[in-house]
Image (cartoon, rainbow, N blue to C red):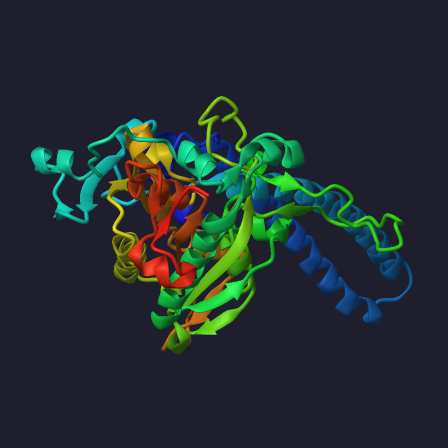
Length: 450
């Protein structure tokens, strides 16, 4: 969230962010509630000060004067009680509105309503290396070229006995799937390779909780706006005996980011320990509300997947935050280049980024059967927007306590990356070459029909 003082002093900039990011909130409502909250708080504190003063005077009073003062204090106490109840109601509204206020986007962020306004600013292919989007002839040569009809990842995987969606749907419902044989090995080889690379770069690797409390999702910014995207556990408080116990709701996380951030909630870190670099591996669950008719075939859009996520906590410095955004992007690109997969980097526009994002890149990998690039990585700088929600702070060299900046990016996510591997590495006979960096994990160079 943003600091309320910043919001008051920069209301026009915040209103523009609300408009550009298409966030459903009326900032004037928040400012009115904030003013009312402050007025009530002042009244309650004034009444409490009066009560404190009178409590000191009462021992020296006697008779009628003492009785009158006691009666007067009862009226003050009743008034304070009523105002306190009103303040609580106002505070609830205030807190809800504060959670919905978006971060101010960076000056480099394109303003646009949807993904059509995202700007490609970098392409890469094994043959050409880096390609400037302005070099249109080279851009056209980035995708993998084939001299035979291209098969989809599902055609390839079915023929090679690597995926079973029919059994997956029967077992798990819509968009369920089984990975099989070499594709399972490739998936875990990718995770191991990514984690080893991140460990070498100073990241602490964590297996994170998939079941998370509401505060973690609110703190990361996935709630309240994205609540419909996540699954809530029914009877989360049920005991082993089978009896039900009333507890707070529990949710299935859509990424390890909330768990990684919540690990540091309410902590005051030391500046010397920053930046903190962590990488989480976990199953991920997303309901994909509103996407029922999108990408119905194959593994591109599923409800359950696996991912290795990068998260960085750094000093509250805009330049340092920008540097880490580029560093995280570079790590993801390095992984794709190791895999020799063509990709492009997009500067994401205001209408296509989350409310908390200051600046955001997507990396899209070439998917031949779709004849387009598909999102495989998402790289974001959220400044202190998440840290304020989770109360993650650090003490600087002068002793001043500040909120950290938080950043995150995908290292590798499956099964989308598997789509790119199967389709870009396919051969005319329907076999698939195993990427060179993964061959040592599988012990084979080519996946052939069984």
